Image (cartoon, rainbow, N blue to C red; front, side, top):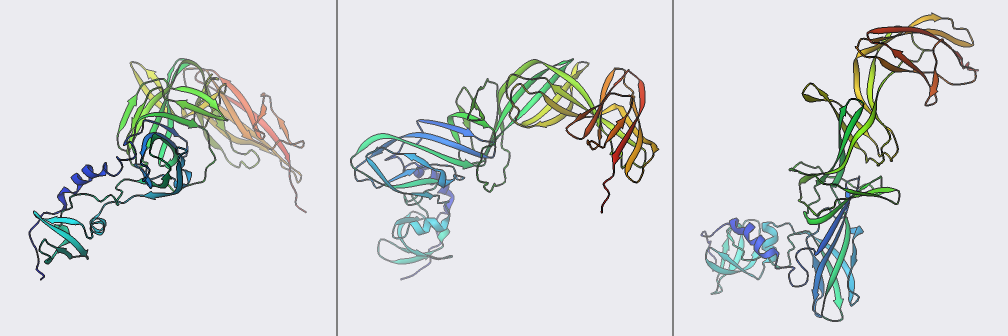
Length: 451
């Protein structure tokens, strides 16, 4: 006898059931939370997870379900340590993201409810499910009307590693696991506060977690340096929230990298951004630099005006700096103003760091052809450079001219110069406040004649 059953309650209780039953799957053999854990975050969006848990096995047990793990786990990287009495046969990654179809599949020949009545689920299709009641009558209902009392243990609702094992005896022991994950990254950011010819530098570690798992009460480390890894696809990341912790971070060099350890345990939830202070240096010596690069004098054919770039050079520090962005502030009257930002690469200790700020408002350079005397065999041009300082302070400006350095090249000028970076001619010009200076430079270079 078939009839349509219209009464019932929809799946509004599903989320509650998930919470109630998910812990029942794993409790018999493995502790729910790690007894200890650590996280090492690398520069390329990859992190190393280490966890230890309590393990309780009966001799008849044939599998261990390790859950949860990050859904971005690199399964080939899993390194597990089991007691010597346990033989490991295989490893599977399982993640049953719940939906109505999977719940129906898992409940075939099992008890379900419609409204307050209990039935056995026989089969289901897209719009109809067949149920058998206590009188062995067959009814049809819409699948959405079915209420599920539990989530079957065959469904793993959290990303899990399933180990097929055999144990020679019942035991209580420990299990340790290490694995790599994606989409958990770190970066360093810096704030440079200038005061006169000194500056204070503050460094922050920012952890951005989109790995699909939270890491609670864990030891946190970050590794500065470019570790050789295979490139892996990255999914889009979104910002969740920000937490600032002001603590000192320990540092040590290791295997050509630099290893930073946070001296307290942290909670890093999924979809969360955390910032931790790791560096503070006061009264660093700084120099203000002004540079301008000109056109190639051998190809110049008109007057050209150039802006002068300004930068801050931090003198040699006694600590390495991981790559990141430095934002610079300078005081004016009773407040600080932002004057520029610059990216730095991984910088070893005892290395000066130059930070680009922007173009100077008060400095400018004009270059023009003063005389052109080319021959069939040589380029021969004289360029006039005019540097103007409109500020109320003395400035030293470095002018960089691209020019081929070879035995056939000749430079004639009254100004002192040197070669820099191979093929740049460097002139360091000192200018008093509100002054300008002009000088000529004759460049001669042999032509490369084909044939």
